[in-house]
Amino acid sequence: MNEPFILTVSYQGSEHEFKARFERWGYTHRIAVLIDEETLIFEPDEEGSYRVLGNSTTPISLMQAIAQKLCALQD
Figure 1: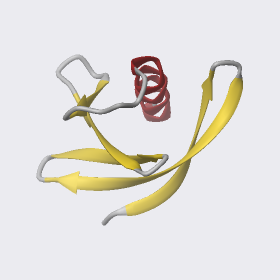
Figure 2 (figure 1 turned 60 degrees about the vertical axis):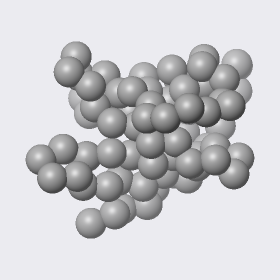
Figure 3 (figure 1 turned 180 degrees about the vertical axis):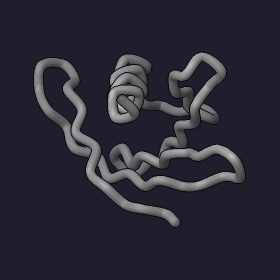
């Protein structure tokens, strides 16, 4: 059940929209987010936040903003 959705994130004073999809992985999940032409995979960590798998050229501050938004969606 991979559900596509639009993720709206506030970053550097403006709103940005990214295509994303929910991916079920066994007992957990991942969220794939398309930034420019690069897909970043976010997964929940042990502390209830999200982390990015792999290396990326995306600014760390943008990845952090996306992770915070994903956490807020759980509430």
